[in-house]
Length: 423
Image (cartoon, rainbow, N blue to C red; front, side):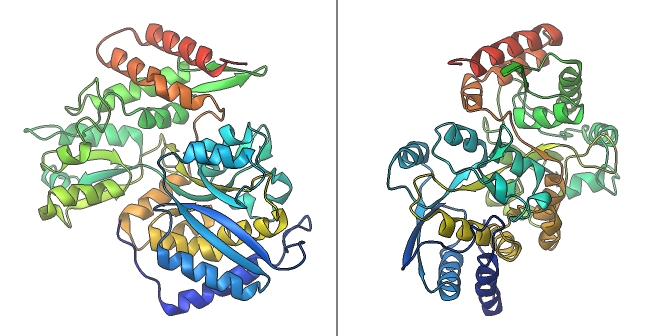
């Protein structure tokens, strides 16, 4: 992803944003309550912002808040879980930490994350993208503040669409199947979809009204064996059959962008950045790639998608929680969200800001899809479910001819056991 530098006028706007976002916080906690100079440590993950954007934010914020000294530290993803866990348990934690949105439940369970439920309205929570906001909300309490999102879209080969006489992308799942069948002929694959692309399956399950797991009576229960989830798997089976994706592998084996780059695949499900990887392999495909949101069951709403991204949290051990909140409010505010989206091609945390990505076809499609974003089950043990690959194994079993209901029941039982281990 190439980072576009912002104009000087944007820097001035950013400074104004910092001033506005730190001026009030509903609950009386926006302005720093601490006396004397305040030094705030902010952990931001590598790749989330450019150095230039960080510097502009620091300069603008400190100019608007003379008593605040920001120390923004860029963190590597490798080992971040252990470092964050240790920081939350310490007495000298950073004041603000960026975390992966699906990690919030794990960190909140430690008791080391500040509850920001009373500030949601002040932070514009009514406009947050649901799939990004949900992972930060644990048992009705908001610990994570949505920062930015990314989700999958359909990347397609415009030449193969034209060859098949298809003038416009599909808007419904039925249209998608019909168009993909037309594309799947003459040596071309209608879609390259591997048998274990489980994030895509999750979206189809959600569209049917099902889920991967549900919480009942204080315990989690695997839900792949419900009629809704089975309907989602059946749609996946029909779509996957319209290409030659391996049934026993995920999208990384082999890397799907390399298969797509050969020019005989009409579609793949990927984040928009997958197109850039295609062009690295096949630069001659520049201008031939298009994007559309994953279709939904009806034309008025895109398909549900897993929304990945980042949240901002405030450790309980922060020595300046009020000042830290003011920084979070600035980073999550409308003006900085606009600049972040334009600079990094991320989906901003607010549904009303999706339009800022309209100039880029891929990110615009991603933003439209994000409006129907969802999250994986909000439990600290979900990471353990992913580690077992139980959903991937279930998908392969169904796609290779085993009984869907039987395999779904076995997978659901395994998920139930894993989610309730230690409880």
